[in-house]
Length: 105
View (tube, rainbow, N blue to C red):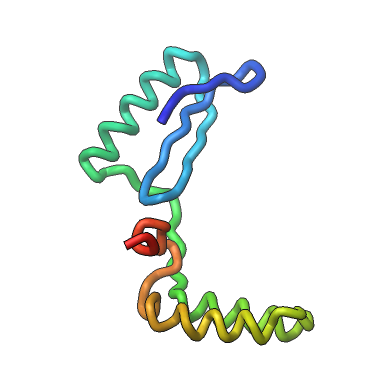
């Protein structure tokens, strides 16, 4: 988490639920205040993303494989095999809720 300056704009940079968020904010003081407010919201579990993907892993995988097959993707067979193996672990989970954390456990 932090404040950084790019060009003449200040940005806040933080992670929530494994997702990186960067937002432009006015002055350095505004950015520091905004970051403090975001940290407090995260600690209270009140920070919300504007929209959350409601697609399940299975639906995403099906669309991905369909795209690969239609576009004659060379790795389609390997992708299909990989997804079949991943499906046993991620079946029933929302795609937006899959983060690196469960993978390392």
